[in-house]
Length: 256
Image (cartoon, rainbow, N blue to C red; front, side, top):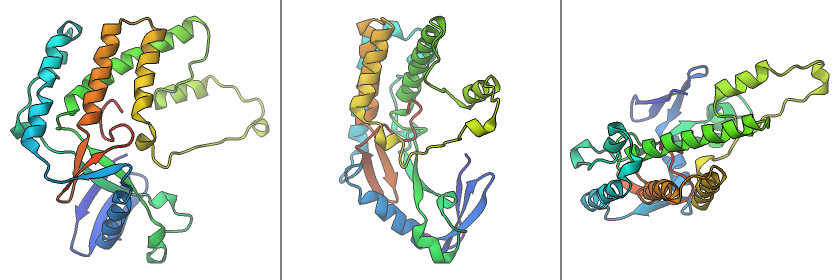
């Protein structure tokens, strides 16, 4: 899904909500109210006062020691580079933007039902202290998923995880329906995906997966350290304010 937000004037924001859905012209007051609504959820977002960027970078660079400890697991120069020391000039705090969920309205969008329109928070984290460690963790988690998939395949057991849309299409192509009347198509959605995946659940998933695959404890600890670092440095900016996402996995991170 492609999302662009363009400030056209003080009164309106023109937002491309989806390539198939067109554009939505929305008052800036809606964004103000919707951001306020999201940030009243203090169990998910905590405002950080007196945020010290220099101290945060210094603490993040302690990851360099982490690299030395697990150096033998970082088999390629590309992987080693993902844990290199970072400098302030190459950083950008992740920022939150809201995607208006026009498609969730039960009636045609209009000024009369603007109060029923909600926004999906999206946090863009491409150049933060956690970005490269998240890339690295995502790569390793992908390896685990494929190993698990091979085990299921060897034992002729359907793999319970649909990894991506291509997997779904492959399943559907091999699924024969003799009578459509015998089936009911049911779909589900999340009110909030990432914030509902708890940090303890991510720990349990890593530990359990490594146990199933008989992976070394040293490698398991490597993944857990990466996971912990990303969770601890989960900051983002909205307007002039700094927040930390304190619930769920980090939105906008590659591994999430």
